[in-house]
Image 1: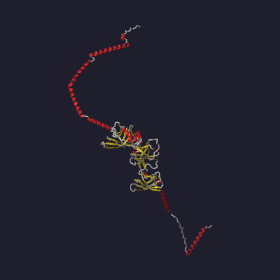
Image 2: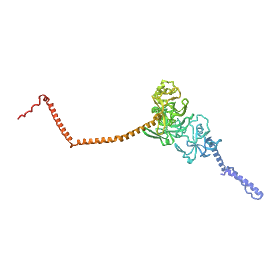
Image 3: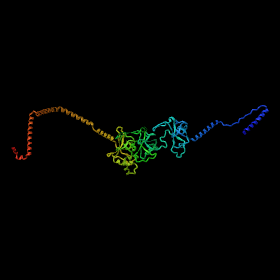
Image 4: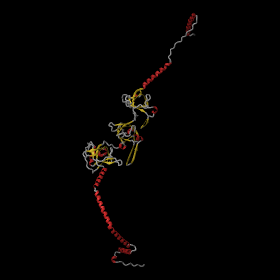
Length: 564
């Protein structure tokens, strides 16, 4: 079989060949065939490279646009360790942005750091209350931090607020120069302590409960009136449940030394509290287990004894006028009543009395009425309308001889204190119970009274006429000297003769009493006879005792012996 297409093609070729042959025959020369190839349209693969690059770039732009969040500005004191495009913004060690620009503020007081945040999570970063700080290697009370930045470089860390509360986003922040002690969301409770001064406490100082660290100091500032210091502390959960309304705080810094009847005592805390200070707390009522509310205020005692003592209540002022030297009496000296400290001295001034034209020391003191115990309560019940406790409390005591007196507290240092005691024999004094503050009568101290007595004795001694007495004594001694000379010249020879005569008499008596003298032998014989007479009397008395009738009848005849 013959393919039609082949046949057709052959016919066409034959026809063409015939034509060409005719042309060739007409021209007289053979003609060669002219072949024209078909033109094909193709796209070059080289154009795929820019196309792919454009697609990748567009995808990167879209991805960058989708992931790029807002730009925030953070102000710092300096830009130490910060680099554009290198310094990262981290939240919980997750990179959430990068520093995009650094410049100095218009007033040249701060450095403004611009940072581009990622879109994811930017809503909780741009909240009011977020805190930023630069993480660098630091050596603090709580230890060493930021050592990882020695290799990776400094970065900016973020502490985001716990909740937004529906506030508008914030894009300008003031950076912290130091890392915050407590980050947001940390379980625990914040409290405030107030004290007259800060002492040795610093941010990061530990807070102890039963000598175990349960928190730390996170900040401090002056009170609005400038009379005290507010100290913020944070107690970690679950130990914050031990802080109740009956909890007492005290300063556990340094080393406490005491010398009392029990001997010399030394109390120290941990090494951190000795170096950097610390706070300790305990409860005076163990039965109270209800935790205190957050931001509760507590007084910070200087020592544990002071903190755990019963509350003193508000003090009331008094004044004392002393007309003797107050050397050694200092502000802060105790006001003592029979060994119990009732208050303290707050001021010492020099005043002048216009009436007596004399200077005197004005000592101002404060007394705590609650330290009087039940006495104050009973007196206040008698006069519940009294506004000033001094009138109710001191008036009856002054009537019974209550006086103020300066006494020596330490003989080595010369320190003195004000003692309140009863002196029944003291002179009566004018006391105005309605005066505010009351002026408590005073009496000279024991040493001052001793000085007065010595001065009185010296005055009496000065009144003695020692010169006249000396003259009379001198004349008496002269007369006695003359008498002795006369005795030696006239009476001495006679006394010598009398002594010689007495000596001769004694010699005679000695010879008479000698053993071989006749007097001695006669005395011996006499004594023998007396002894024999005594024996005879003894025998006679014995016989009469047995034969009392012999005095009437005479002696009975002797009994004859009977022969056997």
